[in-house]
Amino acid sequence: QVHVVESGGGLVQAGGSLRLSCAVSGRTFSNYAVAWFRQAPGKEREFVSAITQSGSTTRYADSVKGRFTISRDNAKNTVYLQMNSLKPEDMAIYYCAVDDKFGNSGYSVHPAAYAYWGQGTQVTVSS
Image 1 (cartoon, rainbow, N blue to C red):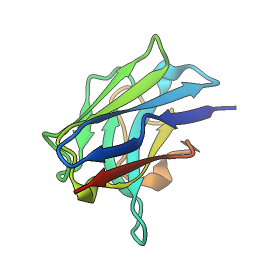
Image 2: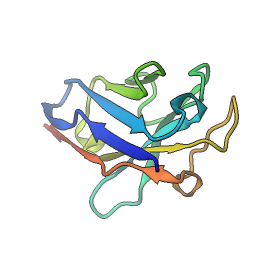
Image 3: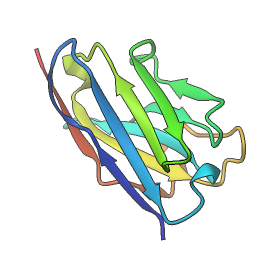
Image 4: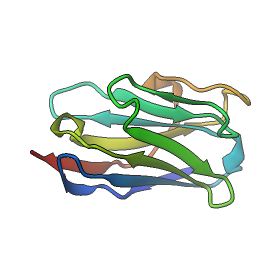
């Protein structure tokens, strides 16, 4: 049984920062690729960022590149998403997704590729 829990969301003014955390338990964390997705009201879930098992490879959506940073601490079974220079259009529920089928250097930008999801954390950005 894999358990994924996001935290760190909240209300922030435009230009501010938040750090989201994704804690994973249940299996060997270092085997998982981890991705962040987000979903705003009335919109489809979209890819934000991903990180491979070792953390050596990361990927970002164009809309967050240069503002968001994904990282992982395998000793703490946690992945982080540092979000800087937040914009109103970043407002959404942010979800963490994990899967161990990608191998050492793999990940996916497609939500359907991930088997395990957290419940989401709300990020609200006021203008």
